[in-house]
Image 1 (cartoon, rainbow, N blue to C red):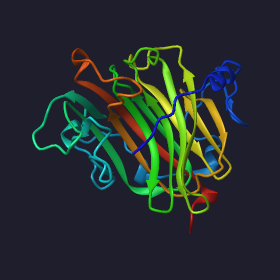
Image 2: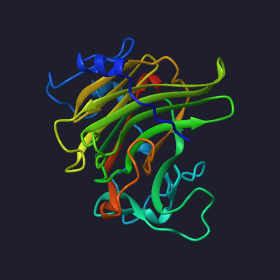
Image 3: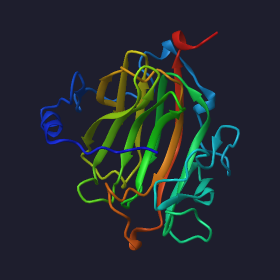
Image 4: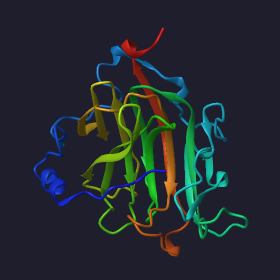
Length: 276
């Protein structure tokens, strides 16, 4: 479903200067970290997208234990058995296993996905998570796909066990179909290099999204800022583990099973954006 673009040499050069393409900005540890939305009095909680994962099972009133629209990036198949809540966390596991009766193209690996049951337009979304220590992708993203309107925001895609990606937080936006432009896929990607191993511990990742701007945070500090030019439709919140054979390479058997763990997801919306 999703397509990941390689970062061009020109964009890498821009990132080295602290800037990304166009009017975007990449930032660094210049300010003290803050958690939760800025100017808290302007926001109100979004219960449908907030979960401390303290129950022993996934709250199926809020979440699908899979992605009803997508079976996974081949060859890894999304198995509901790889999604579990426990010890105050959501765990999404990747395994090396071959299950009988899988659709053509799916084999050797099973992965997992969790998708919100409702969509949201704009907000501040914060998760505390630890990426898998394998070549599998640990991802937190938003999308909605209809025949006339399909856009996506990737808060992070992390291949913490892949060479050259161990500390890379990949952040992206996609446009696949819009009412104005029809079917014309393009994306705008950036990468922030962390000063730590992303699979070694939990870190806090957040997205701030409104009609003017999109901001990506890691550990309470803005790492990327981009103008909002196309992301005006309600989107579904997603967590998943995926095989990324063309980007991270397929996981080695000795690194599996590996688990992407989320301690919490918390969400707010600006009071000015809440419809009466």
